[in-house]
Amino acid sequence: MAIKTIIFDIGNVLTQFSWERHFKTLGFEGEVFERVANATVKSPIWGEFDRGVPDSEILAAFIERDPGMEEQIRLMFSNISGTLSRCDYAIPWIMQLKKEGYRVLILSNLSSKTVHECYPCLDFMNYVDGGILSYMEGVVKPEREIYERLIERYFIKPSEAVFLDDTVKNIDMAIELGLRGIVFKDYDQASKELADLLLREK
Image (cartoon, rainbow, N blue to C red; front, top):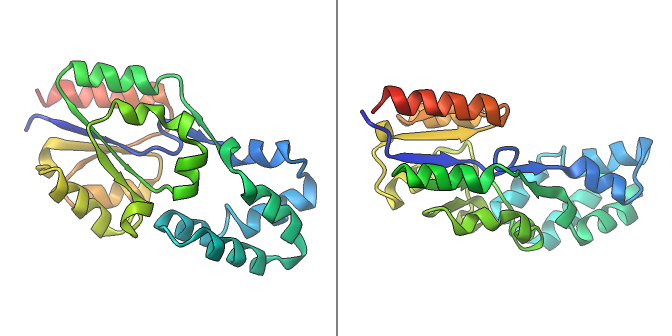
């Protein structure tokens, strides 16, 4: 069955999620670095951030995990524009696939704050044909519902679509729903796997 739709994750696929760099620009090192990371980006709360839970509730939950780091957590959370950077290949890759006749969609876990404060890094969104961002839906990958919404909203026939994501469990759910899946490790690997799949399925 020919592939007609290509679905991309954003974080660590079309962008680099560089929270470590963001922390370092704020002067976080050693124990402070680890404590703030454990209270925020490495905690389960970060997933709720992507789900669309209000920023004030997320910040309070981060602080509750490590009250001794309140000042640093507030500083980190005040502007997270440094956490994302667009990959140079993102727009050319999307444009090439569209030129070849494929529909290109996005399916990504992202928070409203990330979208608004990192928007210059998300300019490739102007070139895709649509998609779903988790914060707008209140559901996150790998929950089944977010995939089902994308499939229904864009009239996707699962066997005619492929999903690229850097997280294995997210790909596993896509495959469970009948989509093809490619675990993204780096651009060279993923672009080759995608090109091979598209060639085989023509």
